[in-house]
Image 1 (tube, helix red, strand yellow):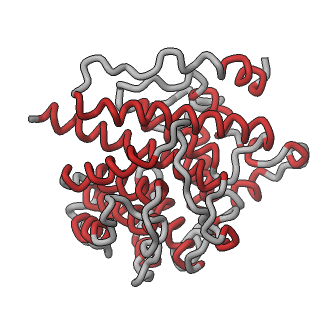
Image 2 (image 1 turned 45 degrees about the vertical axis):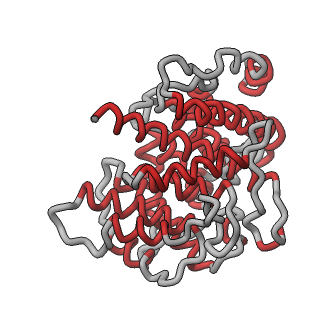
Length: 344
């Protein structure tokens, strides 16, 4: 059975099990239901993308996987039984391109044109998933080595796909991709010095996007954890937490652009980073309440398009990204909250 036919045959069945709410504290049940509805929407959108485009790119499929993996780590959400298959399919470079491009595929050039795709897959899929691709985890080493090869002399990695068309300065988009890529490489067993990447990221002195601050916070936390006995050129976790918290809106959320009203994409990035780095729960709860209040009955969150051409209108791509990141953030917060309660 082909991948697409398997999707069609099983998509109507995989949500029967729903959310395993038994034993969960009452405060988390609304969030668990929201995660389940969000996963269902993200899956349906991802399946449509695969069916129509037959490719991983434009970052739809990495966020599909990331949201499901984040939910699976809560140990209380029933996720799609197609998740492992999505991971095997998405980490095969031949699926980075459209069907008509597959026959003459140049693997090296294709990987070079998909920096963000490789980075997101490395971050989304746990290293413990040995079945995530034919040949086990070999794809991870191939992606990591290619990312090291593609780093520019100034320490940066260039953003790919539609990301350079986003409505923020191009250098900030490059710096955001660089922060995510450095974060991914620090977590891989490769020889990587993050100092020049961090210097490039920190050349952005007045960031305009929540995503930049969230990625920089996660990078700072990783550096603090792994290089605590050294003196790398980076700022502390607490400094970047404060920078992100300073832009929280009164409704508890963040916009994708710091100066904008709240949306699920900006709030998802911020809540994920803050929850992952141990921010006070009272602040996180405001963000959770914002996400729960703005989710539509079908599980979607509507998000203004991130490209300048969207002119503030919600777009399908932004909706998909925002919905996936809302699920990631709610799942991260739930997992961290459970860990704190377990330790008490």
